[in-house]
Image 1 (cartoon, one colour):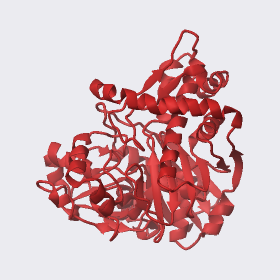
Image 2 (cartoon, rainbow, N blue to C red):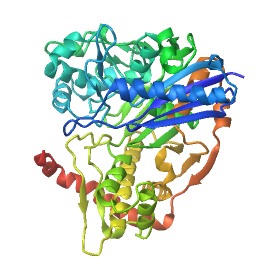
Image 3 (cartoon, one colour):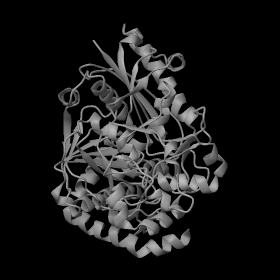
Image 4 (tube, rainbow, N blue to C red):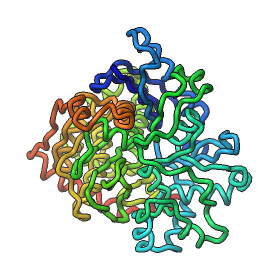
Length: 504
C-alpha cells in the first residue's frame, strides 16, 4: 500500500501525520514552539528552529514510527507541507533567512504602510485587481516595511517567501507558492490573471518589490520538486520523494474535514479562529479575504479573528495560576459552566491583539464592560468565550451581507475539545456546527493533499476517511439573551474605538 506524509507548522505547535491510501492514520507526532513578540504589535518565528527544525524532528519521528510498523520510508509516495500564512521571510542567494519571519495578520507592524497604500489605491481598484483590501493579513505592506526599515535585508534578499515556500525549498531546492496563499500578497497578485503583477506596486515611490524576488506560482497539489540528498539526511525521508507545493494551514485543515465544495465552510478553533468558505464565484468584499481555492475553478471567501485560543491561554496564565497547568482549561470550563448565558451581564471585546475581520483595526483593544462585585472568575472566563462567539457572529453577519452565507459549517481544531465554547458560538451566532471524527488538523489535510497530488487519493476517499461524529445545534432558549448581548457588543466597539486609538 502507498503512504503519504503531511506536516503542519502552527503558531505555537507543529504536527505531523502519515496516512495510508485509504486515509487511515498510521503515525502521528507533535512538538511545541513559541511565538516571539519582540515588541507590541510584532509576531515572529525563527524559521531555522520553529519551521525547519520542527519539520526535521517530526519527519524523523514519523518515519521511525512507520518503520516500527514495517513501513520503509521509500513507500511514502508524496509529502505535503502546510504552515501559518501568509508570512514574510527574506532569503539571501543561498536560501539563508536574513531575519526572523514576520507572521500573518497577528503582526501589525505595517499599519502605517497599510494606511498609505489604501489611500493611494482606493477600495475599488484594490478589489478589482486583488480582490482584497489591504489589512494586517497582507504581505505587500510588510515587504514595504522591510524595504523602509531594514533596507540592508531587502537589498540582500534574493527571494521573499512565506512559510510553506521555505519548507518546500529546504526539501527540494525549489521556491514555489500556491495561488491560495499568493492572493494574500496584496497588492502583488492579480486575481484576474492569477499571476504576480507590479501594476499597483510600481505606483509607490521606489516601488514595493522587484517581482523576480517572489516565488514561482503553483497550484497546491502540483509536484514542486523532490526530496534532495541533503534533505533526506536531515528528515529521514527517501531521496527523490515527490513534494507538493502545499498551502496555508487553514486551507489544509479545511481539506482535512472534507470542506471541498462550494457553500461549505470550515471554522477552525485554534490560536485564532480562521474561517474558509468555498464559493463558486469570487466574493469581493473589503471586510473579507478573497483567494482562489486550492484547485482551479473554485474560490474562497475567508475571515479570521486576531485573538481566540490565545485569549484563553492568556486568561489561564494570568488568572488561573493556582490551577494545575494540565487541568486548568477543564477546571476553568467547569467554573464558566456555572455562569449563565450572558455571563451575568458581562460583555468582553476580545481584541487583545487588535482585530482582523471584519473591522480590520490593528489598534483595537480588549475591553470588559459590566463588572460588579458579584462576578467571579467563571463569569469572566465565560465572558471571554462569549466575546469570541460575538466576534464570530459579527463575521457571519458580514458573509450574509455579502450574499455568501454558508449552507454547512464544519468545526475543527483544538477548541472543539471545549464543548462550552462550541455551544456558546452556536448559541450566539445561531448556526449548526458539524464536528468530524478526526480533528488532528492541517497535517492530516496536507497528507490528503499530497495523496491527491500523487494520484493516490480522491475527494470520496477524504469524506470516507473523516466522517462527521457530532453536531452542535443552537439552544433557542438563549436567543433573546445573546441578541441583546450582541447588540451591546457591536455598540461597545463603536463607542470606544476612538479611545482605544488614543491609548496607542
